[in-house]
Image (cartoon, rainbow, N blue to C red):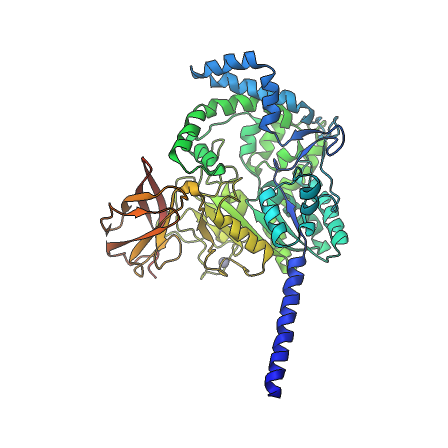
Amino acid sequence: MKRIICFILSATIVFSCCVIISAAEDDTPVILVPGFVETVMGIDIDGENEEQLWPFTVPTVLGKIVSDSPTLMTLIAGLAFGKFDRLGARLGSDAEDVLHKLTCNPDGSSDYGIESFSQDPALCNVGYLARHKNGKYLAMADLAKSIAAKTDSGRTFVFCYNSQLDCLELASQLRSFVKSVKKYTGSKKVRLCSHSYGGQIIAAYFYRYLNDSDVEKAVMIYPALAGTDAIKHILEADADVPFDDILVFVENLLSLSTEAEKLLIKNYFHYIDEFASSGLAELAGMWRYWGSMYSLCSNEYYELLKKEFLDPVESAAIIKSNDIIHYDLIPNLRNTFKKCQAKGIDLSIISGSGMQECLGGDDNTDILLPTKLATGACCSKYGKHFSDGYKAQHSTCTDPKHSHVSPAMDIDASTAFLPENTWFVEGAFHGAYYNQEYSKNLIEKLILTDDIKDVYSDSDYPQFGYSDNVNMGIGFGFDKSRPGFLSSDDSEIVIKNLNNVTPIKILSVTASGLDIKFDAIKSVTVLPGKSVKIKYKGIIPKVKAKRTDITVKYVEGVSVNTLTRGFTVDNR
Ligand SMILES: [Zn+2]
């Protein structure tokens, strides 16, 4: 009996300790570091004469346009004749008029006292912002609110910053902010979670202040670590918009699920290419002397843009900081992250992939950032893939037993900054990380728990996954293999209707280059959120690393859609 009591007692003590440990972990404050266009800035922010100038909002620009409606009506009439370029230029110039106060001097300074919301932890925690400011200055709002609800809104913070500044300057501000959050909460460590430019700011923070040992973990969502080629298009006002991809982007962002909604957007965006080019021309001047633009520019175009837009004397300050970023910080990202891990800091990267860049170009991107620059992974060009039998390069991960090649054979993560801690989500769009269950759950699991140590920890979250935004229509995979793979163990394909409103009907399933036939399935209706299993006949060849395209044709409402996805035959 005594033994049993002893056992129960010790079990209780062990269990209580576990509870205390996990409570202490959950208690670590979370700091959200938002992206370039997510943080509020302007003049006298939160003061009596507040003039909010950023983010660039439709109402501010529309307010200006409505006051000039006769001109606008003429321009809209021009649309019927395809004169969208004029409206683009007009919208662009109105926007420039509204935002001219955001233009910087050649040395990167501003004459207008541009500021962000406060970096005082007592004011920029989610609880205070929700209660007293109606969430007005809350960037990354959905994620921030969800984390706050699951932990403590008074210990979840948003790092508010001025997007004009380069990432080294912002890293220095982040350092001060981390120190004040530690003091305010009494915690020894903080957790960081960023989106887009926020990822580069975190990288710059680790590059400069690693010895501080203030950070327990960092989750970087779609991070702009090594920048983007899109900056070249923006500063040179040269856009070549891939219409289909931008359309899917808008559909995704708005989570459009019905064909009628999609048709509306399609008509509306018909002239977006001309619109983007002419609108950008008006806006390019405003961004010219923002230090951040050159931090966010890819290494490939940095020298070119520096030469084109910055005077070596007048803009020496912008150049000095950005030379460090492009010649030391970015080339050393792998080293910096390795040092972080050696110090016990838990790092994770989540990146989108599988789309063409929205302003043109032929990289595999999350529609804005090239996946290779966000992650360090070697990627094939958009729409292309590695040849059959491709062998991973293993330049960062040197374990030959590890497979870091994506099933679509378009990404080789063995060269990534963090091969064991980078997750790729095909079809996940840059700004839309929160309206898809898959990414959202992965992000929260990474930031709030210690359950996932690397890409092998959780079979629900392998290194390569797929966006389940309702707009994708369907998702599919084979019954036994891991997502994206196919082997002799499988006997059927599982197709899920991601739509939450409309039932779908599967018309056909085909596999390119494989001698397999899927059962006749014409009558199968799949209800919203449900799945169907379809058997196939034929032999999967005894090969490894062979790519096949699986195409599913289905009816949704009145429209016939197809989704093709690259799979790897992996018969070991
Ligand atoms: Zn590895």
